[in-house]
Image (cartoon, rainbow, N blue to C red; front, side):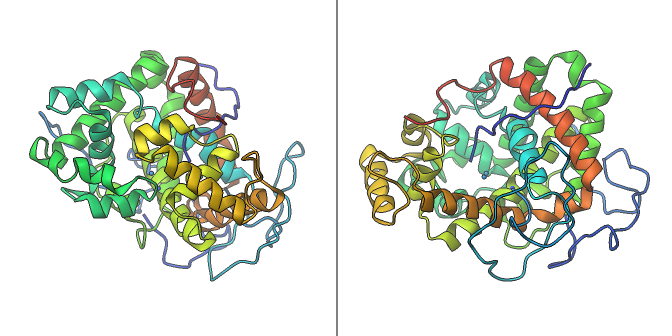
Length: 378
């Protein structure tokens, strides 16, 4: 199977080095042989999955930061940031855009293939849950256990609380968290096989991508990362394509948890975060914000009004220069908070993961993994 480099936009926008440790080439242990789980020999191995019958959350060091510039000749330099770094967070020796591109172009889209698949709806319908919002909330929160609406609203950040409370904790009367986790994994298996093809999911390239992504997860940390930590406690599947999907889930939630801290620092409430993201042209459309996040059009309009008062949006709803800088700060702050996994993987591994994962994403998108009206401006 040919795996050509590809860059695609994420359709959405979460074990561990010591807290505050910066994993630089000098401080990292030399890579050892890979265990079949994707972890290097000597690293603590996650629990492995066992057979089950019916069981079971938008890139790099701040632009202009210190560190070697390892960009390729065809990569543009990151724009300087007008914001100072707040607090102590890991710095990156990688090119400032490399990890961001990998996350948006490979990691997050691969994880998200399950969200809109018919397979996830079928699996949960068989368990007695047909409402698509209930399915979404159940499969995304199940790793945390039988949690209630408050915990999920906090962890997910941009869902309207009364929408969440409509389904949680009531959904756990119909399905257990273990059943939901297992149903999600079965859906991921079927969806990836359908979108990529049986030959691709069993290919050496997918196995290599899984090894690389699992190696990156060794640099993740649990503290203050609720969704990541919950998923990190799940067993690692044996099959390469499911190991890859599991690893992208961990990396997705690790970045997502850090992104919430950046949103709080920027002073963006849940609706303002969504509306300003949509204004970039890369966020979810109003249709999906209403249907899957529970916000009314009045909620969205009020948030846009607050953003105009702050100078983030102009009268037409486009980002102002200040608004564009704010969104860039969000990404840069998120990059710094999410630096460790990619520093741990290293420049070569990151480039290869971007290449392999990007090609898989292109194939999945071409096969109809995501609704055509999911992202973009109204």
